[in-house]
Image (cartoon, rainbow, N blue to C red; front, side, top):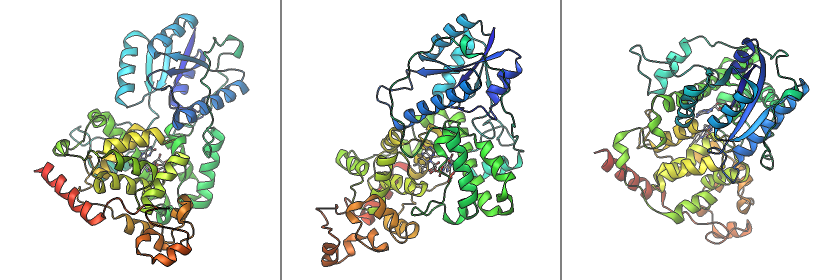
Length: 457
Ligand code: FAD
């Protein structure tokens, strides 16, 4: 008999609670990955390609230890049953996941097979951060206060030689063909390199520069944390033990972002309905616009607002977008264009290499003002002001909008104010080489406020 380590979104050997529990069973450990038909759509998105590369990387690490991974494609219950029969496994250990789909899947499997779930996806489990009366928090500040009062338990384990030898590993199904995601190598080594680079180069200025879209001021770790190539608690622990402890401001703000991550996982755990609808009931009857050509312009980065378009093109070209740009583009879709946040949520999920139901849904509902936190619906980002503030010299826009590259300085955020002869010198013809704004921001803002107020009445 063996113990199965069912790998899901914890693609690492170090500091892995599910693997640790499997080792403790005293039996040899068989690593398994199921390519679930439900999650692996026929056309592979970037996050799926990233995941596949990460599986191959993990397989290489296990091969170096004389073992391997079984990969099976299909329905998880059916495939796990097969493997239990083939190997005589007495237990299956896996890291608990909080999405509605994952929880339902695990409930069904638990009824038939000895599945044991461990912590690890978040720093604190959603049931550990509760109000004194046992109910979940729905406001971030209160959640974070409670979160900070709890000790962070850091697992410090490296796997022993506990794996089933390679020659006893059952057959695997073939993996789909895929091309790795440029800029985001799906390896543990890359996750470690990024963390070290962040600690050395940007962590001490994180609180000052994290909002600056023109700078490389954030960690770029999101896909790695998303798929557990490195865990959120490993990241916190490195930052705590490294030199950032002497530079508390950057650490505090960075820590706060990881608390946001835990918060959104807690929301999806306690309020799974947010997957389908607005958290706030009053906004479920909001009348959104049906405007396919506006959605298309937004997706393609052709709204005529340079900072919005730069964000959308960065997303389409790379699969990643700066957090500030995510907030600006989400506000633009939901407020300026008055289009249902779910349209944007789906597009982001399709495109993002770090696409994560909890963080994405939380981010979208926050931007739309329909979510848990106290982000008021009447906060409407002005794309010009946002651009000037967080891309003051226009470098971010120039990077992603080649057609505006010859326009110097922060004026790039309002090309319609630049005299025509200057635009001509920069090779720009508004309405031809680059669109005029598809909406007037102040009028669109009024329209949005009216729609939100009517829904809230
Ligand atoms: P850093 O600033 O270095 O932050 C470190 C880590 O903290 C991130 O890697 C991420 O794991 C976590 N984090 C940071 N900010 C947030 C946040 N606001 N909410 C939750 N976790 C956070 N993040 C995703 O991981 N997946 C998504 O699908 C996603 N969708 C988003 C959609 C919208 C509309 C918005 C506004 C935000 C979204 N975010 C999402 C959050 C955030 O934009 C990204 O986590 C961040 O930009 C990733 O870059 P980084 O790793 O350099 O972040």
